[in-house]
Every structure is written in structure tokens, then in C-alpha cells.
Image 1 (cartoon, rainbow, N blue to C red):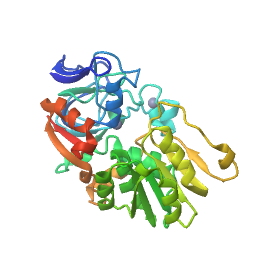
Image 2: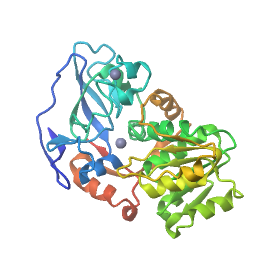
Image 3: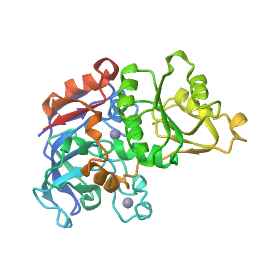
Image 4: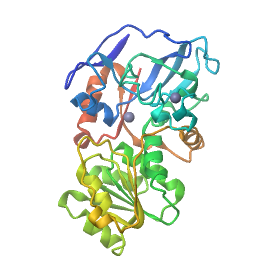
Length: 345
Ligand code: ZN
Ligand code: ZN
């Protein structure tokens, strides 16, 4: 089969690899129908994720059709359409029993990280029973790819951890796919205002279509002032960090109101200053989380009913064989006006 293989920082190729086989009775082999590229994959390509080694097939999102199941897999059979979760869950360890699947002792984020992933014609999924979701007949598969990672990530790490409430003012820093997923799912709770902050006017324009009430281009360094103007010097009830660099986290901490929440989603590679000299008396809660995907079944229902439309996030389509071009487009997101790309096998 063909697969996208990482060969060290800056080196990748679309090449022939052996088709995966069942290794454990709890495995399933899935033929990928649709997959996508995540911001995390770009970090991997730069060499920022040391657990990913030379020869690894990357990718942790996708939908497909079951090709083969191990002897212990009873809920799925050959031919079933399935959604692949970016998080693998054994369902039995201490963390899984707390629904903290991201920290599963036998899984967590392993797909396209420590085991071969979904940017390939076929993928082996461990613990298939608890790591795949059945897709009903007639579903829009493009939309469902957004449920593998970005929607549960934006919702769980941003909206739920940030305790968004009706009438709140929320700021989301970073209008990439994850920030947009937080923007779409924050609206379940009817906040009064959602302020989107980014450096890219195209993305801010898109954010308005997806429900942002205000947008701020922070390129002039005046984002704090502008948020304070919009909120009558009060600040926001929840600030959601969806970039993963020191400046955006510090911005989130500066604009939160007394008693508010700072919810971090971004993957940070550098240390960040925490200004306790101002925050100590501010009654704020700062949260961190990895996505557990425990809300995926709920999000699935909202997509099925049309209440949530993640297809809005899809800007480009490619054939899976053209994945190298897709990386080029996604890697130049501002120039290409790209949010999410869909790759069809
Ligand atoms: Zn991802
Ligand atoms: Zn587990």
C-alpha cells in the first residue's frame, strides 16, 4: 500500500509500505476513505515531536471501512463504516475508567506518533472496540473527519475547561482549525459575545461567518487594549488559547476578567511566563488538557442532526496520492486561505 512516511525533520515521502496486519485480537484493519492533515503533523514534520521516529506513517484523523477484525472485536465487522478517534483507548486501565482516555496506559495519542497512522491506504487500529465509532449510512464523511480530533479538542480543552456559560464574553486567541472548532462548539452554551483574535484577516473574516461577534487583528500589538475597550475594561469571562506560543498564552492571561477562566489548548514547545504578581489576587482558573474524545458521541449527534456543521471548516480537497501537494497548501495556510484539507482515497 501507499503511505505518507516521515524520514526526519523536513523529510517526508509518499511511498510503498507493507499493508498492516492484525497483531492483537483487539485490533481492526481499516481501509481509509478520507483523512486530513493536522497542525500537529506540521510540528512533527519540523522535528518538534521527538516520539515520532524515522519511518513512521503519520496522521491521526480519518474515516474508513473495516477491512478485517481481530478475534476479540465483536462490535464491528468487515464492511462497517467507522470514524477513527485520534485517541486510542483500551477501556480498561485506571485512566480509561475515569474517561481520561488521552492518558490511557496502553493507548492515548499513539496513532501517527508511536505507531503508524492514517495518512495511508490502510491503518491498524488497536483496541478497535473502544477507539472507533460506527458511522450510520448516508452520513457526510467529510464533516465526520472533523470529529476525529479538532471538534472534540476545541470543545473539551477550550469550551468545557473554560466553563463557557450563557451570556458570557469569550475570547479565542488563534483562528486556525482548533480555534474555529472552539468557536463553533462554544455556541452550544450561547455566550453573548465571542471575540476572535488572530493575525490573518482572511481567517478573521471566516470566523465572523462561523459566529464570532467581534474580531481583532493583533498584528499591531494592541489586542489587550482593544479587548478592554470592547468589554468596558472588564476583560473576558473565558479566554481560550489556541496557538501554543508564549505571546498568545500571556495575552489570554492579560484579558481574563476577575474570576474568569484561561483555557489552554495550544501545544507549547517553549516555557511561558506566568505573571502571578498580577494574577495572584485575580481569582482566575488556568486549565490545561489533552483531548480525551469522550464528547465525540455527543458531537456526532449534533453533526447528524445538522445542529453543528463542521464542513464549513473544509477549504480544500485532494486525492490521497496528492498528499505532498496537500501538505504544501496546508503548510502555507495564510497564502492559500486554507483551514482543513480533505484527502480522499
Ligand atoms: Zn490533530
Ligand atoms: Zn486505557
